[in-house]
Image 1: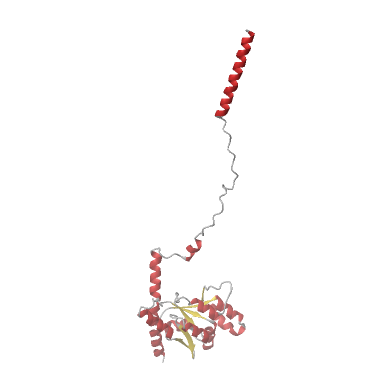
Image 2: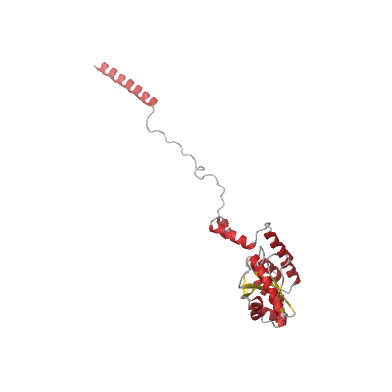
Length: 246
């Protein structure tokens, strides 16, 4: 029975490795329901998981899962202790925590780029995960860890890629790397840092009052003429006076 279970796990792992780039160390995202099942079944995760998956594993969880377990009180205290021993992965709900299932779904969105496994006993969460291609699902049955077979959605996605209708996840990542190396892809931070063109207001210099033109200090031609006329008239007066005196 154990050999058959490992054969199935090896087959499923090969499928996810070849089609979605899943690799060691396998990152297993645990929710509160899975931790509770581990506690009840007295399962030694750190020993059994690497043997079952035949490779290195990393047990992970999120802050939202820890907060959810903490809010449920003493009944899930043991499950909380198991979750606290896992590595905490950063989620996008730093300020406002959400439910554990909603948080785990957000961690595997957009093609599951970090190749997470989702480990849960929540049926609603499992159904939603199966609708997302490329996300391995794990659960516990009769105190035994099981890696679920690829979902119909995942198989349909792989067939569409093989027929050329879609691009596989590894190909998307390699295309993105090539674009980044050639500078064809801009980082979102650079887009944010781009300065928007400000609406240009009126030129402050144009708002200044125009200065009155300073009058030219040089006398104009008409003034010169007038002065000459005056000079001539005075000279005539002086000559007439001299004649009368003589």
